[in-house]
Image (cartoon, rainbow, N blue to C red; front, side, top):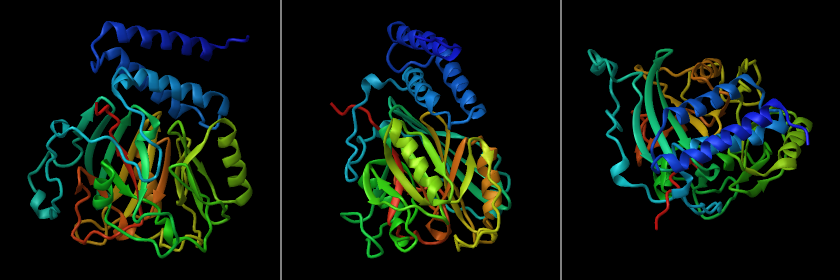
Length: 370
């Protein structure tokens, strides 16, 4: 058997992680574990995730190192079914979040120095950590949720209604859908029920909904390790990309909207392209999802169409998520659908009424309820 430098490093780190479980109490965080996970995340940003031979070993190792922070021994295996949700969160583990659910006029923020750019640990248990942050960029309010999870099936999708169906699909608010499935933090999805004529390869919680490829839209596939694969428009490219994922694993969720914002750490130039048809070069509210590293994600919403928050172009949105350190980033349905919810409340506070959506992406707890 041939051993390379990476294989040796993997073996050493796995032994270190295993030994830690006997030296520290469950749930304790060591500096070594934090360093190891951060080091792994930094490594991911420097290397292409398209190296299929090395993606999965790194993801497995990162999950093992992260288990020191979020011990999987206290986690349950969540059902992957579309209509199953997460574990019931522990109420005492929520942190108070300033100004949650309130829309603040810019004049109200004068003299407030800790409202922007101050991450707040909003929830933590043995399976998930969520931090929230608000920034001011491009004359707009930017809302960010940073999430680390212990198991890949804690990133999930949910739909309004009782089954996957086309434009006649039901709708509900992001907050209601998240609450229905014990979603701790959630964002609107890709409005899957509105793209029947556009095609699109779509999978929800392992359930195939539409088996088509597109010359016009980029797609985001999330595999069974929780890793993002952004396949740019082009039927042959997308077909080959899905085959590559399925050769080593499974596509658990696949979204059809876009465009791609960041691929393998490289910000994508948002060229003029009329195929999307939703004013990517105008200032608008935006919503997107980010992967920073193994089992580490971000949900980003930019408010718009008000005097206090004008919104951003797609190119500006790509710059925002790239500046956050995204390795992969994908645009979701925007406009008034763009909504970030935490603990049943709209964190991306806005003056407009919440719009009903057909689907959401959410993160949930996987703590054992025994």
